[in-house]
Image (cartoon, rainbow, N blue to C red; front, side):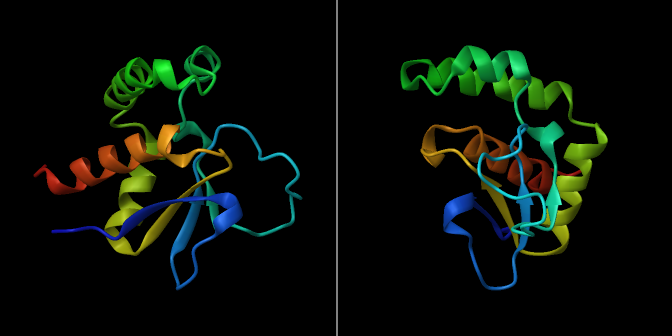
Length: 123
């Protein structure tokens, strides 16, 4: 079963009834706390501070970053924030939002794939 889960940059907010979830660990620069650009903020599904700082969006490190982030996700498989994200994605169309400039080099596509795999696997 295909799950309606997309990734998007915060500055290019998707429309059309998607439940929007910010998945960055840090609050986006220049965004007011009362902006209401998303319905939920799940900062604990983002890479750890140490991994995020090590990566620093250095595209040459992306392959290693992706593997290390995937290890973090696997280790946190049963944690409430990841369970909540999977629950949301199973119930409705969801947009995973990030404030990063280069979506393809961020953690968000890795997270989306992880959630899709989790929803597709039995048990």
